[in-house]
Image 1 (cartoon, rainbow, N blue to C red):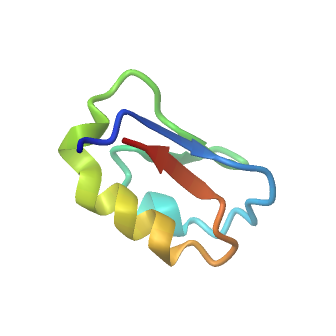
Image 2 (cartoon, rainbow, N blue to C red):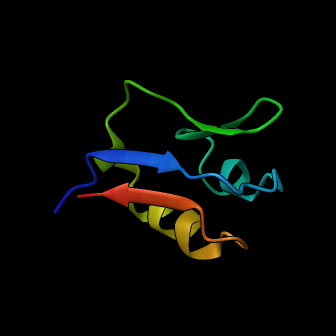
Length: 63
């Protein structure tokens, strides 16, 4: 299944790892945020890698 939505829950430490792994989806602007309005399915592997690599496990997605 393709990823349809991504978000970052409370507790993000702002380490920048999500943006380093997938800058097409994640952006650091004081705090991490998910860029809206893109086709997340194009970046599925990178989103999953960012979620798995998150040291505080706050990157979430739904398929």
